[in-house]
Length: 296
Ligand code: GLY
Image (tube, rainbow, N blue to C red; front, side, top):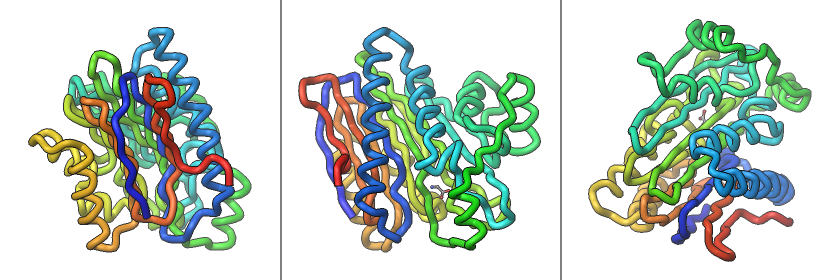
């Protein structure tokens, strides 16, 4: 359980690799996830310096995390109780305040690409069969996200909630905020159970703040975590105060979730009521980097 915050110069890139459930992740697992996030954040900083658009960098980061099987998103997603993977991803552009996402995506490695594609659609959150139809229409390759290790967990009927959702936030130098979240879900859940990530409780961005939540989706939805943090900032609270208030409420209700958040002013917050969460926050200034422990 931990809450950290600060303030960095833009552009800021914040990533999380999930807060897990109440079963503590080993220090080695957190260190390994953090190393991966540090490399992805460094690459993203380089892309922003080359004037690649923030929305492209957001998807670059989400794709990189979805491609890394240590995270529960894309390749290596957890299996639902019937042995199928159903992934959820969402993105939100703060300047247009446009949310889009996919729910229950199967047979692909990068649901975030579809979520991003829907930014310009008039139907912006799709489940089956719309997800599969769109994937074929725009040429997303058919691929299995199931890894041997996730299959073994499922065969062993590991019910422990894994919830290692990934998330990415960006604040650009001209003050625009972006948020994206991608997840394989809680693992071993009822087939068709929907994650919080493609709701405004799990992913939110506006002109005021961007937030990506991770952890037990039902609790994130019950507490409207991302929308609540954003509303507090919108109504004039600074992000640090908003985050500490939201964290105290989560603790009082014995919640198992976490978040990363950035405000329009460059304030950031990384918090988890679970034992551990891998995260990186990288600002533009010299030494402006905060992260979970990269070496155990
Ligand atoms: N936060 C991921 C999930 O509960 O599905």
